Image (cartoon, rainbow, N blue to C red):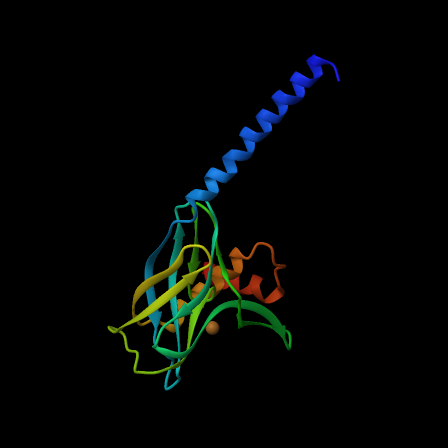
Length: 188
Ligand SMILES: [Cu+2]
């Protein structure tokens, strides 16, 4: 190897090393999680299942994941989402547990009726509008975040509207026949 080529290689290595240091520094900054607008809806009728919604904000340079929610308000607390399924020619929304909820760097993830939510299964006490429930959110990197969640009454029609809004947002999903009709109804 002649001297000039060697110098070139050494310079390239130095540049590469400098470049590699940038992501390392960003990783040290980590996620910066906060929770906005938390609210819960009480069980419907005489049921024992309630749900909590909120906005998970991340002002940090690194993505994080909500992996668990804890609390003594329910026997079982699960992370859920809604999926659309076609059943007997009709589009129905079903809930499904998810292993985590991704919160992007410098972004947010909104939990709302008809979408992602925290399911409180087998509530251990009466949950009425005006009450509040305490939850501890467990993030993969940020660790535990406590949230005081006020209980609000959510009208059935409101939930229906949210459902339709969510369907529109699911751009990656193929639109089904029933949804076009629903979109038309919403515009009236
Ligand atoms: Cu659910």
